[in-house]
Amino acid sequence: MTLMAGGHPVFVSLKPSPTQDGELDSSSNWRLDPTELASKFTSRTKALVLNTPNNPLGKVCCQLSPQHLSRSLSRHPPHITAQTVCRTQVLSFWPGVLFLSPLPLRRSQQRPVALGGMFRKAGASLTRCLHHSLTMSKRLPARRLDGLEYNPWVEFIDLSKEYETVNLGQGFPNFPPPDFAVEAFQQAVSGDFMLNQYTMAFGYPPLTKILASFFGKLLGQELDPLENVLVTVGAYGALFTAFQALVDEGDEVIIIEPFFDCYEPMTLMAGGRPVFVSLKPSPTQDGELDSSSNWRLDPTELASKFTSRTKALVLNTPNNPLGKVFSKAELELVARLCQQHDVLCIADEVYQWLVYDGLQHISIASLPGMWARTLTIGSAGKTFSATGWKVGWVLGPDHIMRHLRTVHQNSIFHCPTQSQVAVAKSFEREQLHMGQPSSYFVQLPKAMQRNRDHMTHSLQSVGLKPVLSQGSYFLIADISDFKSKMPDLPGAAEEPYDRRFVKWMIKNKPRLPDHRAEWTHGLPPPQGLVAIPVSIFYSVPHQKDFDHYIRFCFVKDEATLQAMDKKLQKWKAELGP
Image 1 (tube, rainbow, N blue to C red):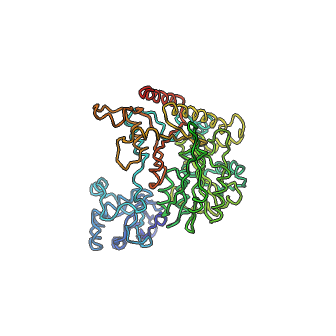
Image 2: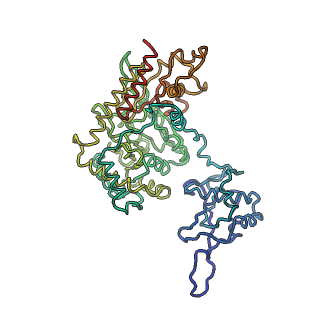
Image 3: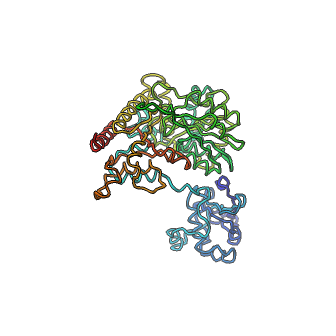
């Protein structure tokens, strides 16, 4: 982990003390040399890793206290103090988190210190340190996090909790998974007790086997469960693993806008440079319902984004938030350019079973010449309406997958066994019913198409202009008419309009004096309807160009859709003719 983060590990060993002949040795006899330990601390040291009780030794404590170490270190670099030593130990209690030394040092010069278990709890002194606020003279966060602190999801989710709302913003079903999936999970939890333990690091064998069999037929490939399949902590984990494994410092990654908002920070955290190209809507006739199929890439603009530094292109079909299902011709354009420029394709296909109006999802990996350069990412959460299970997967050729396995084995290592068991059983069931009316992959899109149509009509009834979704959980709606009628909603001047509009929709109708009522131009807010501003799915330079759209999730139960209807109709009545 230190190396993957760009750091330099520095090691110091616990050494065994001699024992008498015939005497049983003990891990307590393995000790650190205080002088040797102190010598490892330099001006470049950022963190110390503490493992106690120690694996593999089993050591719990030794005779070296933080105070003893502090006295030893006082004769060494002046920035090492008792307080620093204690807080370094606190940092080491954070599993999986490594802090790197600050610039201007190059990555090759950064030197976090890695240690095996070393300290005993030194009474109240260490306890007090554990409760202190962390302050360091060195820069604490890694520079790769610069500019990534703000997350719009946190802001809008928190805001929605403050008001009585109908939540159509977050992308999760509020209805149960299919009975066969729930039963499979219950059986995994209550059945074989060994399912409470680790399984294979790269995936529960029956799951990797069924994924290889199931998707091999769809992709036209004979997949090896050990070489071509990796099970991850959700599709999010699959994406992160792919970026960490393949994107290097200075690599460019082409991202098609609007994009699921994690693609950009994942590129940046890997040291890459995101390059954006936008789907643009074609004009529609007055009164004509727009469709996500009208949003297209300009072939010339797309081709111009490929350079000698381009490492990968991220393709999301069906697209979140737009609901666009890329056609075969569009996929062939992307495939041709990827092959021409020797570029990888990271295909996020988590909504592949949610396509509507008789359309067919096409995996770009199935096109000629693309299997060898494509990672196909899927999600059990989206597939079986169980987003909390957090089971995802990546499919791809072994010469790419081996690098993802390296990241996986050195980061999360393993995904929860029982949820993998349930997903395996669910896919086995679906394989038997594939293409039949009893298949969940047939039933779910039919039901969600009805939800989509219901929401489309409701939004139209109050003057919003929905863009008909071809797939996914979502549709977007054009709010241009409202933007022209009430352009001055509260908010910062530089804040995109759609964000101010969504906040206005979420909040209850404010009680303002009559002389301040002009801020809504006499229009009341729909009092507690949650959507997501589409501008968050765009790069900063393009946000203002698309800040007249908001995203709704229609994968909700009937009661939620009826509550939406009531909110919207109340709004319509207050607006008047």
